Image 1 (spheres, rainbow, N blue to C red):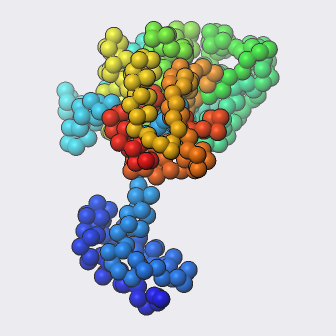
Image 2: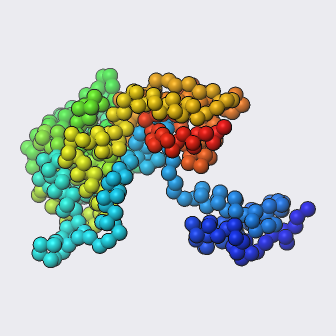
Image 3: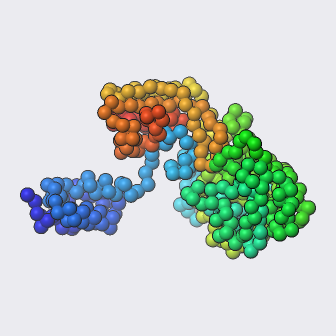
Amino acid sequence: MNDLRDLPGVDAVIQDECLQNTLTEFGISAVKQAIRDIQSKIRNSKAVPDWSVNPEGYLEPIQSLLYSNTYKPIFNLTGTLIHSNLGRALISKTVLDNIAPLVTRPINLEYDLKSGSRGHRDSVVEAQLCRLTGCEAATIVNNNAAALMLVLNTFALGKFVPVSRGELVEIGGSFRLPELMTKSGTNLIEVGTTNKTHIDDFKNVLNESAMLLKVHPSNYHISGFSEEVEAKELAELAKSQNIPSCVDLGSGALIDLGKWRLPSEPTPQSVLNQGIDLVTFSGDKLLGGVQSGLIVGKKSLIDQLKQNPLKRALRVDKITLAVLNATLRLYEEPETLDQRLPLLKTLTLSEAELKTRAEKLKAAIKAPYLTQIKESNVQIGSGALPDKTVSSLALIIEHPDLSAENLLVKLRTLSTPVIARIKEDKVWLDMRGADPVDELQPILEELN
């Protein structure tokens, strides 16, 4: 029986030849700490396994520990395409290749090449947003919650803002609009009811309102006996009182998805055309870019946002701006957008392409697993089109000796983790997320 005194010292383990690649990958500090953590558990358990008395025995537990605490690529086959927990929208590899010089070398981030003096970091993307949405000006912060907070803090600090009770959303991760408004220094006035709000509800509190806000319910849907105040009505009312109006679109589609026979969402340009002063929306949902919050609208108001000290605290870095710039460039050639923007390319895959994927992956999984291909529906997800789905195909997997929950665990432990969902007590793998399928095929063969 092994004794605790038989455990090798940290330095003895570090010097073993089998660990040299792991040291190169993770660094000596991380590997040393992993050894200490592993040996601490052994000491606490008072049981010394055979592998733990030899340095080479530490390779697998060290790698298991370190790989569990690092970012890694996965396959999102959940049927929720823009998944908050799985990185949201995918960035085109072409986009990343194109911006490599901008993030590995100095750039004119805040430098005006014409005047040789300090410039504005938002200016390049601002010009693009003006072209694409028809706005007078724009600015960028680190996410859409920050965009709304900046607007509220700038125009309603210590003042009152009415919001329909049907629009008091929870944005995600327990971040709720009323709490965000409080943190921005704004006082909320709830108007209307959960299912019905009229323009008169806003008129009744107009004298104490610093601005008018409408929140597009992009992460939930109210149907049935319901009514909401349209953006145009809100804009006209705000204008009559000379106070700002703002619509928070959340998901922020920059183009009408109906062009590809997909569910439509309001675009920033359509809201601005109704007379709204400011529109906030996300850069990494339906826009298909990087995490950011975009604010477009009247120049006089945008200028005030830029002057708020909070803007500096919420500003984005050069990598975000470079990715956003390159992604928006794709929108300037809308006729090829469905082939160049990963999200749109995924949403417009044909049934034949989905079937080819499903058959390839079905062939990779052998008995005793049972497989079948079925029609399914996917959610675009993460606060985008909650009440509308897109048709898809799914590969369904069962195992005679494994529950669906245990099969999910097994899929997550593959060399590249596969994240799926359970439906009807079976594991469903959505084919819209099965890209690249030639890489996924040998991964699923590891199940056999």
